[in-house]
Length: 76
Image (cartoon, rainbow, N blue to C red; front, side, top):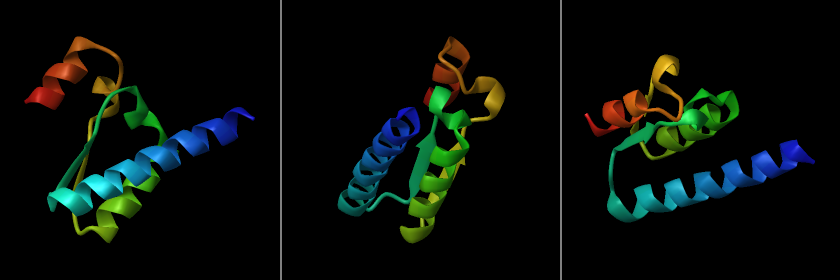
């Protein structure tokens, strides 16, 4: 049950990201926060970035948490 909820949430997030890239024409995508540690979400975002010819940035694991360092790195 929990895995299906996670998969649904990641699919919804992927759909929103696809729509955002398509509407804005942006060629960069950044995955940050605690979810940046998720291998499944990384693979979804890699696929989307590849489909839209976009560069995918993933915050390093030591900054991928709910902390000030991650927020500062994302803003940088």
